[in-house]
Image (tube, rainbow, N blue to C red; front, side, top):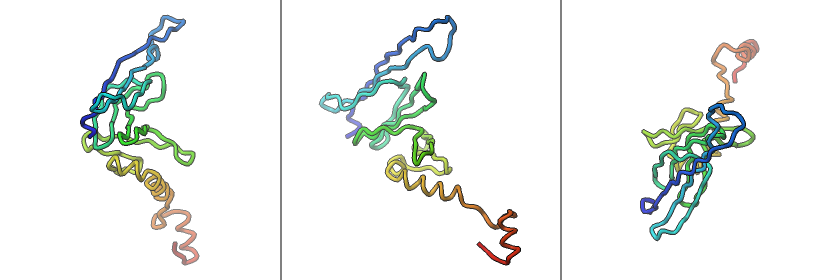
Length: 159
């Protein structure tokens, strides 16, 4: 079904007028337009505001290689083609920011915990993955020579 979608990228780079004559990376505002059409040539989705460099479809996800130009430094944007939900490379969960990378060779999401996940599995279980990551990140190893281990050893206790 998704292979029948037609994806069009329209380049609309706009020059930002500046007071100085200096060249900088911020003189262009990327305003490319992404259009997704179904097999009947009806537009299903439209997105502007990025430079769209390339894309690929992986199952029901569209992975876009982007440049935000004047914005932050995200390099990918992932769109669920079932409901057209946008998944950004950096996202906020419980007042913390997290970052994902799309491994083009393995076609998997690489997360902060060092593991790779299938795209669909990651986004369906993102909250659970992050919570497990935070638990593991805040665990401590009592077998190492730490102050806590010394205290427990002194009182003949174990954790």
